Length: 181
Image (tube, one colour):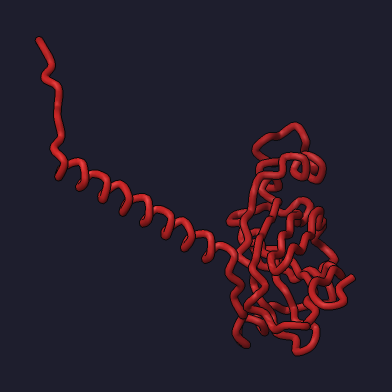
């Protein structure tokens, strides 16, 4: 069987180029939209903020902020949080920022990820992979655009630890913004 070469006319070539250019433009615009929504900071309303019962810092959760970088108006935070011996059902932990001037809370879109080292270090039964699985997803990371926050303010970094069985608000003692330590 012999193949017949396909020849496109000038109008077909022009139409194909327009289609490809429009597809590339739509892909770029959608990619930008996804990126912009992933670094957006959400202000918690009064009801959400009051639901976060704070007891001056958690006495049960172990945590660490391993990376805290502020570059221009972008904030990047990476760390982990667990309650040793506690089981995770749904991981919903997140980083929050508290305005030190007016007390308002802002939630950063946070992502959890595997931290096998944390699971193996803090699980009581190191040999049982299924038990360690609970703590393996203790990693938390967030990137946020701080342009939407009040200028010239300082913000305390908090961790809302939530392994699916209630949440705890952890004061980290770390701040970002004007005059941050």
